[in-house]
Image (cartoon, rainbow, N blue to C red):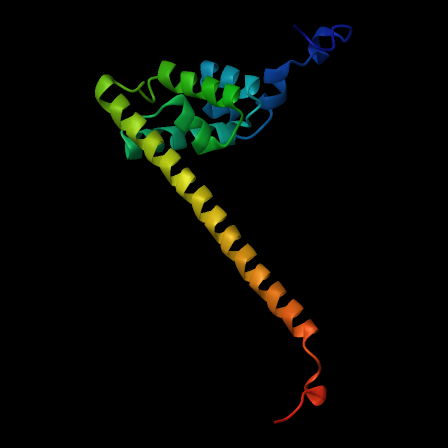
Length: 154
């Protein structure tokens, strides 16, 4: 699909052409150029992302599509395509049976951590509500007492 179909041939631009004028374009191979322009990632960012994907694989010992999504904080489909690029370019490997168990353990630990954070937030909110309720009771009780000057001395 070409844009500017009515324009003269020398003036027609496609997605790759828009990125070809950006710094770092000449450092990408043809496949990287296609992925960079399809995902709309500027060449220099794409090169940085390649390094990050390899670093993540090294530090974790494995990399899943879900981990790629977490590393780049981008939408799932783009992260998935970037992951598939990394696998096809042999920058990273899919989890093997041995490290798939490690990946599952990491995901389970992250899920448990999120649940703990959620429970801690609930407990803090309940504590704040209890304190607010106690303060409210003191205020109400104080409002029902006569001012100190009207209290009888015995």
